[in-house]
Length: 128
Image 1: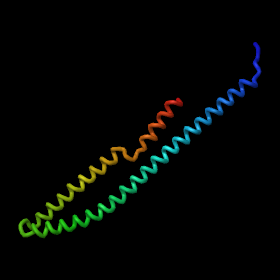
Image 2 (image 1 turned 135 degrees about the vertical axis):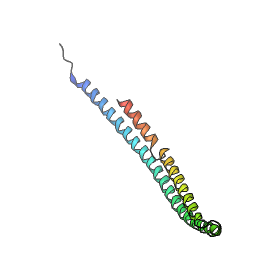
Image 3 (image 1 turned 135 degrees about the horizontal axis):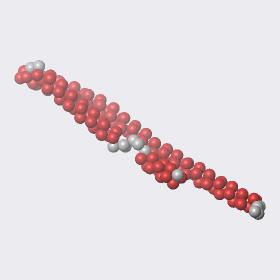
Image 4 (image 1 turned 180 degrees about the vertical axis):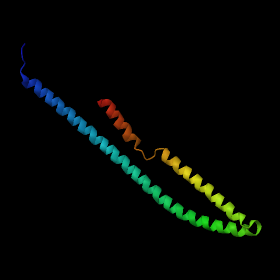
């Protein structure tokens, strides 16, 4: 059997491998940039949510305290101690509703980087 000179075919092979490596590095960098953009959006959303929650909690505490005192004051002559039980049950139901709402926000996957994960899955499928 005859051997071909290794010079030209080796350089084409090396050039092809270098091209593949450059493309993989470019793909990796673009995915990192996409993840960074999504993380910045998530960070901004979390910051806004935290500020809104803090202000809302403070206002809700004051409102709740004043309305509770007013309700107990107005109903004490008629209901006596039962009004305290009714207020406690009402607050418990509100707390359960807020807990369910918070769980719904988390399960809607607003903080899960969907676009980045989809692109990484596509890259994995394309490479394998």
